[in-house]
Image (cartoon, rainbow, N blue to C red; front, side, top):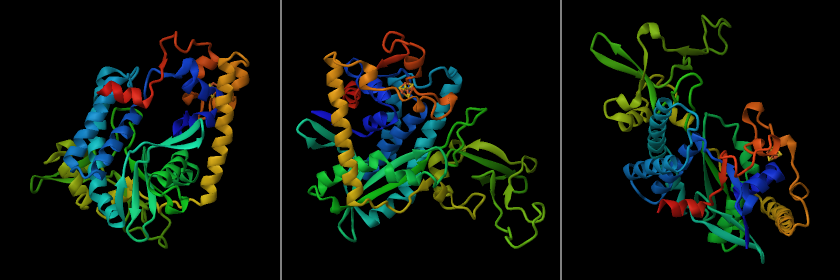
Length: 399
Ligand code: SF4
């Protein structure tokens, strides 16, 4: 049976040639022989959250997430051309970010979710049959059951680089949410879409590497401290710039007399430091951070780091339309693959190149297949690409 799933659907949504190269070329598809290191943090955080859903304690969850990160690191050359010392430093920050964000989520968000929902299952792969030879697969991050009305939601976790609510509208058309809603209905709702009330997206901010130095600015791993010379103790801060609590919206327009924001000052002795050097390490830092012990105490880091908009409720029509569209689109795609394999059509006829996607994110972030399409690079003969491994093959390699 031909199986479709989020990443494959998204690949063909971007460009037919991209979908072909990534998933069908030489039977398995190809990918650049490099992973971006941000992706590995996301996978590790997913593993940690899953462990917490399964009832493991936070120490075990951090340990499993770190193991996942180490596996990923061993499996692929994710740091590419990054110089070895710099790569080591980024890895050390990433391990701290993974630990910090899991501790923040476990303390801040999980207890609220467990009050509202019963945990049903997580990370369970399910295939729903669409036709005799086409199936849809998804692995919801978690399926939860409302304690109030007994309906289910699929809980979908995203890791994000920055604090932003702007991302949320993308949830309305997110392929992951749509496929997972169908799979949730099949797995726990007796195929009745009405039993699935929607998708609860949750964004965990994991920060990004600073442009000019190998620092990941994330309040869970970087803070500031200043020695108080009167008592020999440190004062701590989790933000360099913050809202001015005394700002008067009706006051003078002068940014000097009525500033909207305030900032720490190096002249006053504030210095950056790693949260792992805080007494008690990341664990103690995160606990005190969540309890509002650091400057600015009038702003809540939890609100900025765990973004949990109201669950998006999909209509049955939205899911049905998606289902019909996928059925039509992928019946054709698999028929074209067959025709190509039988020599009846060329690659370009079967899977046209859609050049509008080549530089979609600007010339610096060109499509992963750029070298194949536009520079004549041989996909598997150049050493730049490798045969794509399926998730089953990756899992088997780890055992
Ligand atoms: S480089 Fe352009 S044409 Fe080639 S796969 Fe990517 S988006 Fe499609």
